[in-house]
Image 1: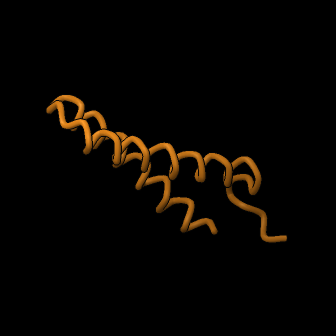
Image 2: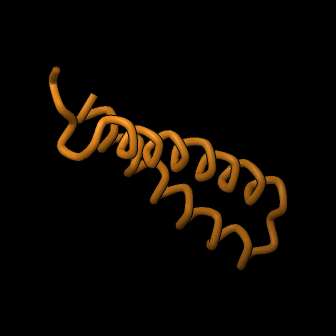
Image 3: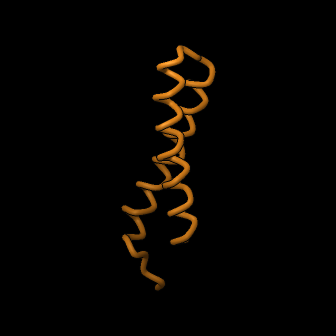
Length: 59
């Protein structure tokens, strides 16, 4: 779960960067998809850190 959390965290960071870039270029559909990805993957990452802790416990 630890590696998966890191990967999802990186996806959330890249989606946040993409959201800012598409907002600057005034691309609404791209912004909506990037922002949705940021919210979903970011929430999953934060929820996993809260429930499992970092580093996650194995037992």
